[in-house]
Amino acid sequence: MLTRLFHSLGIEAGITSHTERVVSALGGFSVILLIFHISRFFLGAGDLLLIVPSMGASAVLLFAVPHGALSQPWNVLGGHVISANIGVSCALLLPEPFIAASLAVGLAIGAMYYLRCIHPPGGATALTAVIGGEATHALGYQFVIAPVLLNALVMVLVAVLFNYFFKWRRYPAWLAERDRQPAATTESAAAGPIRHEDLVVALSEIDSFIDVSENDLLRIYEIATGKAEQRHLAPTDIILGHYYGNDAFGDEWSIRQIVDESPHASPDRDMVVYKVAAGAGTRKSGVLTRGEFARWARHEVCRDDENWKRVPRTGA
Image (cartoon, rainbow, N blue to C red; front, side, top):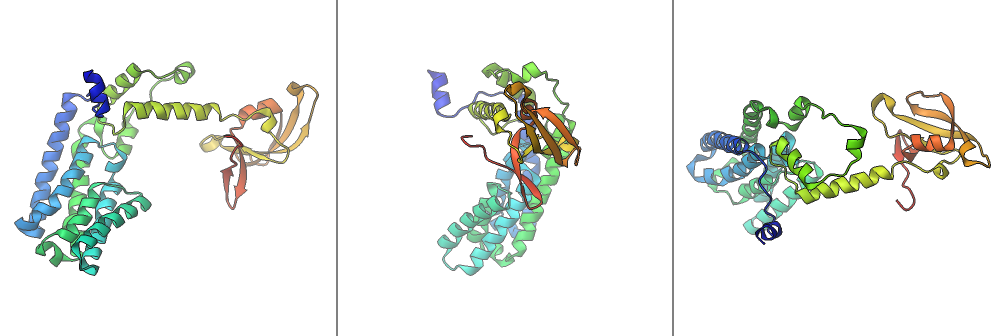
């Protein structure tokens, strides 16, 4: 009964260690202490209480979810600075504070979306630029540089230095990925189903808060597995004159065109002649059975200016 209640309320079972939780709390304490001193220098004690809360929200993301997409440097810097610019502009151009504040937050959300720097505390920064006190309004666009940009830079720098001492939570995310040892997998293990206990063990080994539920992870896995199973083409999908790609990376990537075929009464002996149009082996030719070529190909492609794009499969 209690488990069902927790699930309905969205309360996830705790899988992070006590060490991880304490480290996150200490990181947040350290960075906000610095932010207080920086903001007080530019805003004074009065308006200080308005700008620091948005930075406190950023501290939660940077130190509790350091590998989250919303916590990365561009999200923090771009989210705060762009939102601050919008907030100041709305405050200067619109005399009605309620409309200016509402528009600032809405425009900030849209801008962060389009500029790929969504950072929820940025909405608070945009709001602060409008509803801030006299010291905030007196700064004008200087508010964007100091304290907003300066505070954001300090937060990112502290996050990089502080988290570097803990290998499992190094920041930004690419530092953790660089240091992470690739897991040894076998073909049979990769193809097997993921169970609840598998996820629990994997998440506990990561030992960092991940802003996605277990059900979402399972759903993503199921969708990805289904797409992988559909990735190979059928022999009947291989058509004379059409182009196909193998969906590989780096030096293995290749685009082949079917330039001739030799149909046979027995499908196993149906042959195709192909020419490599791009990638590995460009200008080379080869001969395969239609089934072999279908197993190599992942999808049909077509030329789009200087790029190759997938041709949607009927019914896919």
